[in-house]
Amino acid sequence: MLMQLIETAGLNRVAASGVVAPISDQYKALRAATGGIELDEGVPLSKCVCTYLPALPEFMLRIGQIPPGRFPKTGRPHGILIAVVGDASAGLLQPSRGDPVAVRGEIAIFGEREGHSRQSVEDRRARSPYLAICVIGCPARGSSVEVLKAYLHPCISAGHLMPVDSNLERQTFQVLVQLRTWLFHKKRIGLSIVKPLFDMSARTGVMEPDSNSDTPHEPCIPDFLLEADRVPKDGKSLLVIETMGYADTQYRNRKEITHTKMSLVTGQSPVIRHDFHYPLNQNQTERDRHFWLDCRWQITGRG
Image 1: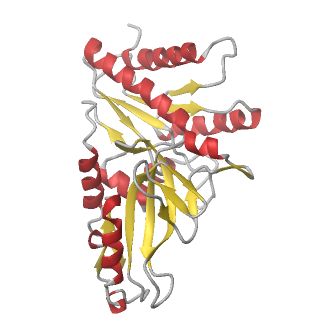
Image 2: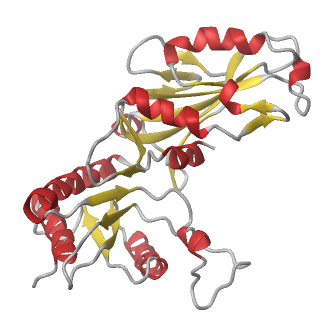
Image 3: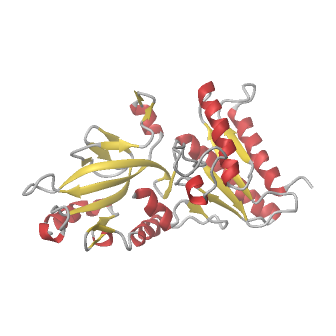
């Protein structure tokens, strides 16, 4: 649900203007995106959503006062909290300001596992802040309202709710922001930055030659897309951007396959890699510059 709301609200896109709305307007857009969604039969999500963490106690009280009959399918009134948090530990969400929020059940964090190894506290904090979506309700009839479970996904910052998959993606995003500024001032090219959230092969209907719609496949979700509003004759108006965060061979081989597919579903668009490991003889500042130039020349052409 969280990703669907973010996409409907347009929070996975930064327009060519580069303007990011105030955080209050971003939350307002999320609330507007709940229109037409029901939590239960005849129960609009818009009436049972909270996006202001200090108002959580009042929101929980309001949920507790709803008669069970108002939720005919589940028989248990519940609501949704969406807010930014800085960290999470066993049974607790830690906002950047204010008291911790107790969570009765599971706290799932995007990317908290690589293989079977749970990320360390240091790794998790490095990926903060997170946009959290929580279910608020009673664990059993007659019990008190609690935060029942939560899902956390990293976002750009506490003031920018665009989701990212890692802290490295945040760094990629910052390089793209610098590129957008340069293109606008030097070339009068507007550049939108998009964070795809869903399988593009399913949405575009473009599949690999040896597959069909019933064949299981790895989702095709690029890290970012760049959309240029005008380009020279030899320039590209759409680029696929991929953050290369690991150095192991298995990861790199898998990425080669997925990058080919990403190019296919975007009309043979170039896939530009922002590498954090290679070339070995370059430091990260040099790799960032190489990535910036790759994107620039693809968009402006060399003519």
